[in-house]
Image (cartoon, helix red, strand yellow):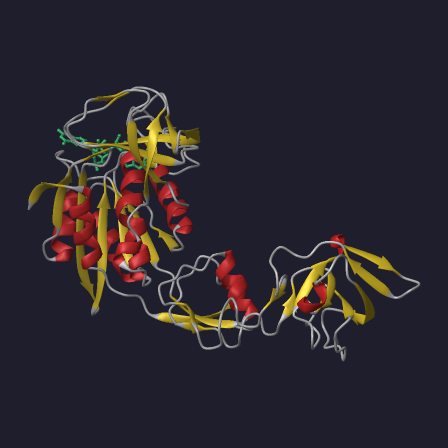
Length: 413
Ligand SMILES: Nc1nc2c(c(=O)[nH]1)N[C@H]1C(S)=C(S)[C@@H](COP(=O)(O)OP(=O)(O)OC[C@H]3O[C@@H](n4cnc5c(N)ncnc54)[C@H](O)[C@@H]3O)O[C@H]1N2
Ligand code: MOO
């Protein structure tokens, strides 16, 4: 059924109908960009022991009364061992950043605020630390307590998460399997990268762009050879795609032209697909359904063939879908929006929401400035090269001026 729906409606309908991928155990060194499939608790307090946050002297705060107190230095606490030093009243221990705070001491004074007399074996404190008692002591458990849940299933593992898991001694973790994404292109006009296009032919660039987008979204791409415009070739290609993948993404063949073989085949394979016209530009026509393939539900998303439409639709629908299949919560996959100020005027269409291409620069007041690219023509293949954000012009708006407030969505890689 053909309906003219919003981006949000289409995304919600897709995200509600996705299968959840199985999980696997992998080495931490392979974890970047993966989605966690277990709950991780801190195995110990963090820090594990009271330690110094500065190079300086460990002492008793009560000894800091009076003007420039002088204390005798009883030894050095270095990082990596436990010293047998005991800081009694009137004494201090030299201490290094990360070293265990010796018994008896409750405060660290940075060496910059101390004067040392090597011969006398004393240190004079020139300035009492502003933080008072406990200054520069990192208390055991102050960041995480043993047993505290720190990472939940569905968390995306970036570099900080990898570092945190390493600090817990986790060499192996449970993550969602990477989605295998079959990429289908159809059309007699498509030729391969190394072929010279004849009159009327074009290079199958969408397959390469989609493969790159799939990799950026943490998936594995399976690129199928483009199918010719015959029912048999298109059906064979889609059947092969369904067998080899967790989700099939195609480009082209979803407009209202005469060669709608793709739509017919997809409709048949999914037992009745949703075919939508979406109130967005670029990216109006989109097909979605799931095909029962040997007992597996394999989603199929038919993107429009225009490269820019394909790019925008990937960000709005496919990237979120790949995340949800890996266990990210549905409300965590919607493109992030912020308010910005438009740097120059733009002409758009009031009939659909328009996604502009541009970059973010500096700030105007408390908001970043969105700089739209000059040529927003949807056929302009360079349109999204170097883009950092989509500027969103809502339906009903025909023109926006420099200085107008505009919502932007970050193009996350
Ligand atoms: N009468 C109407 N015509 C069109 C409408 C409409 O509503 N009424 N919608 C337009 C919109 S919007 C879009 S978007 C396109 C969608 O077209 P299709 O998805 O059917 O894609 P194709 O017709 O196959 O190709 C469109 C365009 O993209 C180029 N293309 C296709 N595949 C690739 C590829 N693999 N690599 C690079 N470029 C590709 C193709 O050459 C065409 O220029 O329909 C409008 N028409
Ligand atoms: O939506 Mo089409 O994608 O405007 O070119």
